[in-house]
Image (cartoon, rainbow, N blue to C red; front, side):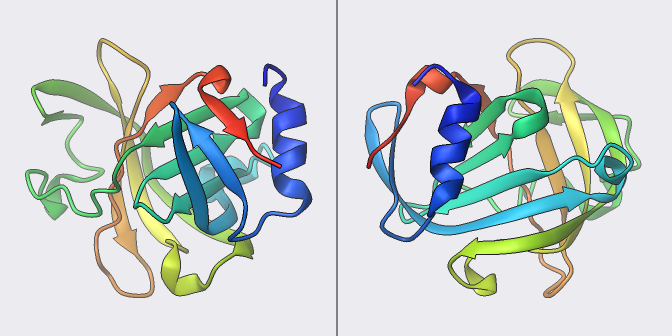
Length: 168
C-alpha cells in the first residue's frame, strides 16, 4: 500500500486480535493496540498509535508525520542506560551510537485502548526521547510506566509504508 491515510483508515476501521499485518515479509497478529497522546503533543492535538504483536515486535504509527517505526523485539529496559541519565544527560550512547536529548520529561496519556487489555501494552508513562546525532531515522524513548514504575524503553527505526501490508 502506498497511501498512508488509506492504510491508517483501514487499520482503524475494526482492529482486533485477528488483524494481521505483514511487516518486512513476516506475518504479525495484533496482541494489543492503543491510541495515545503526550503532554508535549497536546498543544498540537497530536496523537499516535502503538501496536504490540504476538511475537513481541512493536509498531508505532505517527499520523501527523505519516511515519511508521518498527522494532523486532521490545527491550523494555535498556540496562546500559541508568535511570538517573534519562532526561538529564544531553547525549547518551547506546550500541556504539550517540543520541541527543530531543523531548525531555514528557508524559504519555492513553486516549483509547483499541485491542487487548491494559496489561498487554504500555499505558501512561513518564519518558524522554533521544534522537541519533547521525545515521538512520530512529529514536530512543526511555521512561517509566506509571502503573508499575518499571522501565518502558524502546528503540524503533523508521520503516517505509511499502514494507507493511494489512491483510483483510
